[in-house]
Image 1 (cartoon, rainbow, N blue to C red):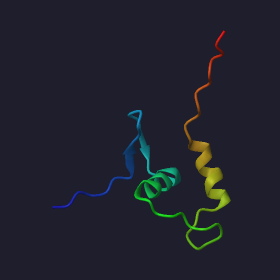
Image 2 (cartoon, helix red, strand yellow; image 1 turned 60 degrees about the vertical axis):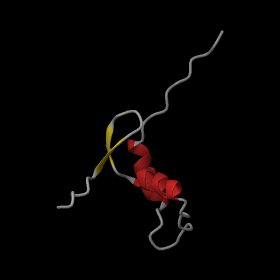
Image 3 (cartoon, helix red, strand yellow; image 1 turned 180 degrees about the horizontal axis):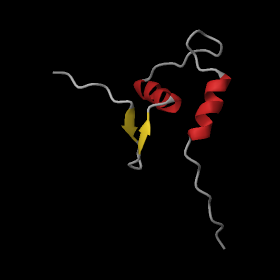
Length: 66
């Protein structure tokens, strides 16, 4: 029997996260497939990128070296 596809994936740092816009973008890049052109049917909109940025992991602040 085939396993059901999960809505979650494990990130590089071990966290469990929902499969979202950036997950799909990175998966396509890894496969070597081209992204859809801006405005093409099925391409992510500006609103989709804004929504996904709200849930994105915040970058770590760099400490200054003395």
